[in-house]
Length: 365
Image (tube, rainbow, N blue to C red; front, side):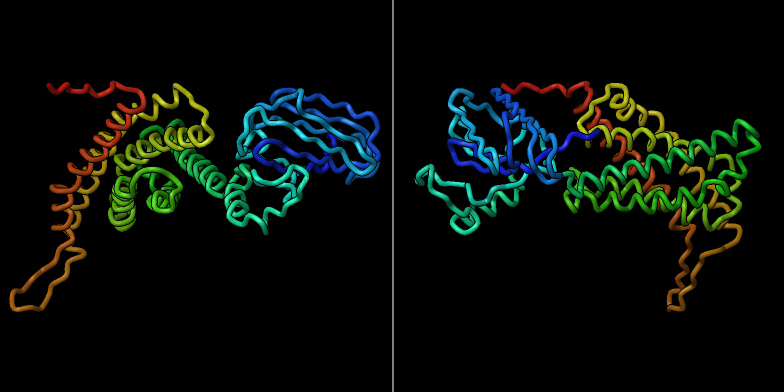
């Protein structure tokens, strides 16, 4: 059976914490007060009628147990808890998640120059302080939208890319290399959808959800969408080539490591193996991925030259003809290698910062 908790109201000034337990007809409560903890248990009349109620508060900072007192009345139990050091606490409890039974006693907050017995309304008398505390939610950082959103996003993307890996692996185990021609038909739409969703990662730094800039995510996601949409989607002959299988497996292998790593960092759960994989697997996957992308672009270049597709002739005095194949040549010459260098340099620097080796500092005389 779930233990019932009474409503508990708290307030503070610089010297004391005031706690009011909304419980009537309390008789001989079991109270344990320690330097960083208050344990309360008693039978009384609360929100669920006459029942046994209990709660535990792990204080944000140390208290003076000897100077702290409590008083039991017919309508409630009042605690006046002395802080060990005079200071405003950012929150009452050590944990950042506020329990539902804990409320704020707005009328009990006091300033330094007020008498301890004087009652103040912090909302009216100290609007700046109240606004500050409200913004901080009195120190309780609820499971805010950002953390929930990033958790769901990373989980969704991990499941999506794991689905691609599982489908391709099962098909290969059953059919071997004969499964290659059906790779795009099996997981192409899923890969396109997942990479369109990945465009959100370009916006995450802008919204302050993650640290870093927008350039690297845009470079990576934009390059992949270029391959999936402009190369594969519009050229069925490319879709049946084995290189598509290797490309999709390589991309997915990177992502099923990256997203669990992001989730571990979001919840501050460091995993040595996962961290090592995150900052090491790219050394193999990135070169393979870039080679596969280059092969796809080069083969599509041949197909375009044969069909003369996506060619626009402009009726101008200079008879200009715009060919998509020319754009692909420029892409191969001036984008693939610089993009590979930029992404791999970024990952190498990130690896140095996370797991080493640390760059040597040059001593100047």
